[in-house]
Amino acid sequence: MSQYDDVWLVIPAYNEGQVIADVVEGARKTFPNIVVVDDGSGDDSAKHIMSTGAHLVRHPVNLGQGAALQTGLAYALAQPDAKYFATFDADGQHQTADVEKMVALLREGETDVVLGSRFIEQNGQVPWIKRVVLRTAATVSPTARKLKLTDAHNGLRVLNREAAGRLRITMNGMAHASEIVSFLAGSDLRVAELPVDILYTDYSRAKGQSLINGVNIIFDISLRERSRR
Amino acid sequence: MKFFWIQLVLILGSVTLAFMFIRRWDRANTRAWKRIAFSVFVVVNIYAVLRPTDVTWLAHQMGVGRGTDLVLYGMVLAMGFLTLNTFLRFRSLEKKLTDLARTVAINEGARLNEERFDLDLPVSAPVDRSKA
Image (cartoon, rainbow over all chains, first blue to last red; front, side, top):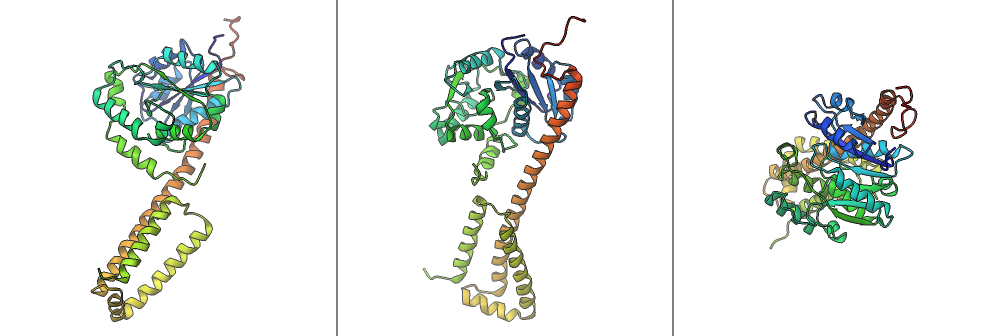
């Protein structure tokens, strides 16, 4: 038994066969419960995930990271003992130590959602051009401003059961980060930010979002159906 | 500036397009309107082929030089509606596909993981190690 039996890590993975097993095994040293959503990978990701102790859920076709996150959350929510839900990247850029800090904050019961931020403490790890763009995104986004967020697009988040159960990610692609922030801003959930360390390895840099993809995100968001909610 | 009817028509068309982005556009009654619009389009088409001079007359009334130009303007608008309609249809299909794939993935996953970890409880429950 571990003190983190009530925490579930949700890891969306798309063609991450190279690293996924190491990332999952590394995280499982701390967190016994992990669900990896293989988002219709064309490589042998599923085989690598099967070799670990993580739960595997496979999309029959590629749907996008937002869809994978929602699937993983739905799967984890179905586990009766799960109380906290963390979204974690498959490329090894997130640290389990950060998740521990975030879970500890949630356990105090003062917040419903803890978001990771790369900018609360300036640690010089983020490439400067990315820093400028992400800071601008956080500053111009009305919802991020309302929540006083410093980083609107961080993949590391921990939600309690109430927040995870209410979240419905409809943006299948990469616009889900903005969608989550705007959902939080429109809800009465209590949101906090904690500084996190991001390891920008060559691998994660190559796999990560290019800045030009930000254009896609802005487009997706502006076309979103507003009638729901 | 002189006012032309064609300007009103084109502007109204564009505004309607913009509204379609925001409002839901796959309800039954909007579908009915789309069908009516299509029928009208077919009838007008046949009429215009039979009596092209009438189209030119209408173009003059609306402040457009030639009948051909009026048809072109109409086509630009129709094209816009068509594109948007296709886009919205694709989006709603994508949503259905997502729901379907998610249901399949979760059901399959639950079965698979139950087998892999040999449990009827979540994996966090201690697996019986005494036999090992």
